[in-house]
Image (cartoon, rainbow, N blue to C red; front, side, top):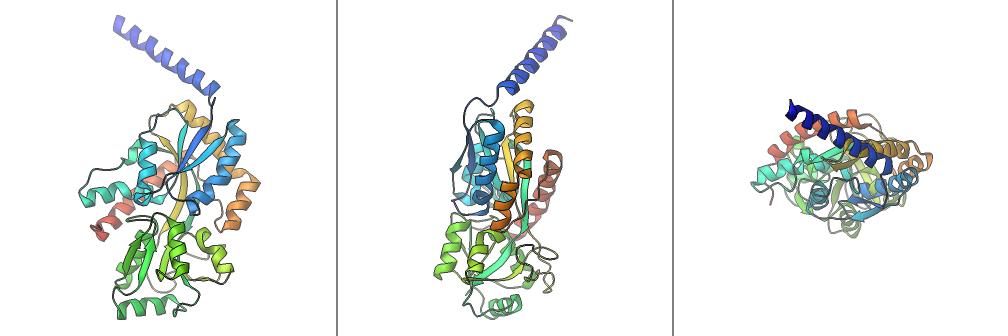
Length: 322
């Protein structure tokens, strides 16, 4: 009986502490980790979202880019950060891929998927197949036929092994029966610079990363990994329309350390929801090439789990990549 009373008292104290924390949180600036260099989709989404969340929370939300390992360095950093709501993560869908990639490679996991708690999804775009505007390929059929006729001669860039730019290209390669050479970079922006400079011939990336270069006549988009039409590029066909059963979505979402108190998580959830509904945020992200497709915590948790399961199968098919 005495033990039950002690446990009940402890639970009440913890509940009171959590309520007090929620009522005072936040009392200092919050750091939003973007695990990629500036200029990529995560960074494009993070900056207007952070500004809007700052207004809602009454404290600055400061962007910090921690790139490397296809996003794994920044993701691992947040997974191990104090679970107090002052270190949060704006991630891409590679978050669900990298833990399984570590297993395939036989190395220690940089982080476990359950060490990060989903809060909100902001975008979910199919990636696009981009080449230089002066490339010889006018259609995805041209591209595939050339890759099959000259195995390994087309170099494509990515944000890192098993990242959101590597996985879709490997899905296409498997479906089309072709071989290309993978050149990993530290993020989407450096890969796009390499494409523009001719160091690589192709890449798969979110529409927002290349839309300005398409409009400037420097990049041509041959196809996308979705279904239907892209809002930002309505004339671009899907790979399925071209006869390839290749589908992939690059999403962006907010995460926090798994053990963050519920009250703090709910406060961040409310701020994220307000940011996603903000007209300025919507316009900035849409003008960059990605419409806001908000998903609140319960649905986003289910989405992440389903995506992780699907991507685990894809990673196993890709196999070991050094």
